[in-house]
Image (spheres, rainbow, N blue to C red):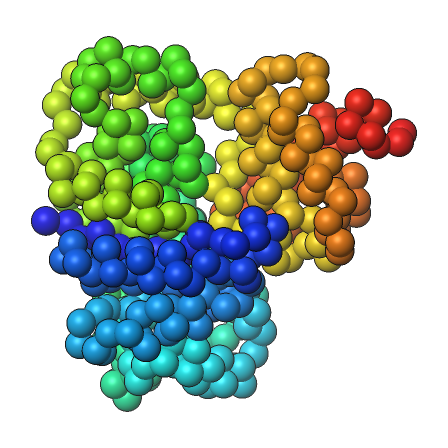
Length: 380
């Protein structure tokens, strides 16, 4: 059976506007439920939860369980690397953050055009290979949001890589920008096991439009919407781990149930997913998965991921009057030290970080037009 990986990217919060306010009590409950279900693969990164994600893993897993009872995967933060002298201190800091002497899986984080300053100017591959030889890493690999051609070039040039982490779900399967199917085929060609991220595409596939859900329920009323997404990825060949970034104990328990009951899809069900994909794509305004890489890059402190989430939901409602979403935007605007959509200075730093290739400055203009109105108390 494919392993369910517990991704630590979207942990529950005590304050939804503060990504460092992790609800550790609930995370402990999640870790316990996950381990009790027979799983043990945790995935984090240096930048998760505004830089405390690895320490959260240490607090909730390492300090509570013996080292041989779990596997830990983390990533070298290419976003901050400009020269080789940074590598040793960063790696040492990550070991300290996680509270371990070695990583089971270690990746170059998001190898793509967005991080080329690091991988073009610094010999990252030799570094992680050396750390493996020193016993500090068990398995080396990479995560990428690049297309199939880009992935093939990397795997051809670096046979030392042992696995890849790819964005795969039924919505992105034939997407011309993401190329999930083609990327998986490249990994198979080079005999690299695949870990999957974003099986629910940042929550889009857990909360599909009503029209799409109706089609699913008419075919099988006993299947949840989430089960369709899980069954799609769980039955792909050459997949070893599926990462889900649960934000609550309930979500995690649902993920555990779904992967344990992920029987294969039949041809009719694949056809239904194609129809569902068409419906979802026609409803999604901004293809944001809430990875928050853009947020870290924004000099104006705009919580881009949060604003895009509100904007998407507003557009799905297609309501031109006052809404709770607009009120939520107003409440956000009153928080200290945050930027709103109209504060964007179009520096384009966010564009370099976005794996989904969203024209963020242009979309923020639309967000401002939608929410920053006199109706919600904004002055023109």
